[in-house]
Structure formats: C-alpha cells, structure tokens
Length: 330
Image: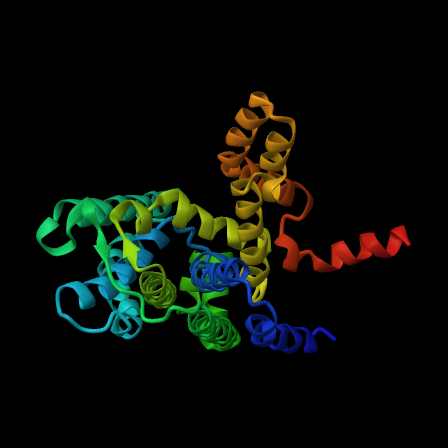
C-alpha cells in the first residue's frame, strides 16, 4: 500500500483540474505544487545534507527575475526562464557555497540570510536592469489556469523523482554522512565541501525553476515579493519541518498543509468571520476578522511548535507514530 500511495496521489492530481473547475481551487493547487518544488529543494540541502539554509528566496527570486528579464529586456518568451532560471540560480549558489561552506551550523545559516538581503538590494537599486521597486509586469500566456497547473504538476513530479534518485544514489549516502558527522565523513575520504556544493546546486536549480514558474503564472514580480524572507525562505523551512525533514514525500505533505493553513487565516477561517460580521452587523466582529486574517504567522508558529513537540520528525517521518495513535483509539 505504501508503494501505491504515490501513484494514487498522482492519478488524483492528474484528474483534479478536470473535476474541479473552480479557478480559486486550481490556483491553490498550483501554489501547493510550487511549494512541493521549493520544499524538495530545501529538503535536499537541509534535510539530507544537514546545512540549514535561509537562502531559498535568493534562488527563487533569481529564477523569477531571469524569466522576467527574458521578456522585458530581451523580448523573448518568459518561458525561457524555465530553462535558464534554474541555471541562473545555480550561478548565484556556486560562488556563495564555495566561500561559505567553510562555515558550519548557525554561521552558514546567517550567511544564507545575508545572501537573501544582498539579492533583494541588488534587485531594488539596479533599476536600469530590474526596474527596481516598480517591478516587472508581463502578459500571461494562458487565460485558463489548467496549463499552469499541469506545468506545475510536471515540475513537482520531476522534483520529487529527482530527490528520490539522488538520495538513493552514492551522492545521497554522502549527503547523509555529512549531516550525521562531517568530521567522520572527511576521515573516510569524502570531500565534504564538494558534496555540499552538489547538494546546494541541486536545491538552487529546483528553487530557481519554481521562481521562473511563479513569474510566468503571476505575471508580476518585484523585489519585496520574490526575495521575501518570510514568504519564501521561512515558508520553505516550515514546509520541510511540518512535512518531515529528510524524507522524500515530506515536502509534498508539508506543502498541502502550509498552503491550507495560510489560506485558512487569510480568508478569516474560510470566510467564517466575514460572514458573522455581515450577519450580526457588529463592528467588533469585523475588527476581530481583520486581525485574524493577518495572523497567519501566529498560526504557522503554533503549528510548528506542535509538530516539534509531538512529531519531531514531521508528519511523514512520524507517520507510524500517528497510525499507532489511531489504532489505540479504536
């Protein structure tokens, strides 16, 4: 049954836009699939190699701007960004990793945090190239969301399959050995610096591809959107932690949950508070609804605390623990 679950899920996802025709739900699923890609990238560098990174926004934004610049500066289709967005992100990751992988633990995490800010400031002040805070606006290729959905689904499937192939290969064993004990790995003759570089570039490529998809789908980007620490980097970490760090399908589960939680708060408990405010005519309910709709960060925090306390390996990592609880309650 465990082997059939991914196939069943893939069949459901393939049929989803044909059954659910509502644009809103298709939009949410496109976001979920995009986060599967980003979460898979973060998982390979942090979950398997043990290098906690806050740099996803730098790679995501680089991929997004690559696609945008193809359209705005070169007059080419922004879809070329799907081919070159990941490569551009790797070009950012390579020199950064070469220098900063001599750092460990919190020092490396802080370096990735700085990389985000450097990329955001470059995109902000280099107005002749990026148009600064005005951002880049392009015409979307498709009116329907279905083509974007299937492109996002293909990218998500490629990401998961790639991570599965890599982590079950010799590279994957080297990554895990670095995570468990870098000094011991070096004593066995593993070039830890080079393999951390490989892991980082895989993560950057996948995240850059997701950024290029975002540009094509949304049609607009600016530095605050695509280089956002909270909305991109922190969200990627939460997807990994909630779903299960160091697991193949953890980012898939985490993406579904985190997008659902974000939307739950953004819509005021799926419109509950707004409906109550309209029904009662109470200004107080309207004020409460306003604050609740802005409290998704609090919701994320509570969810992560609960996961760390109750399921330290994430939902996928502690799935047997979850199933045992339900078996006992029957």
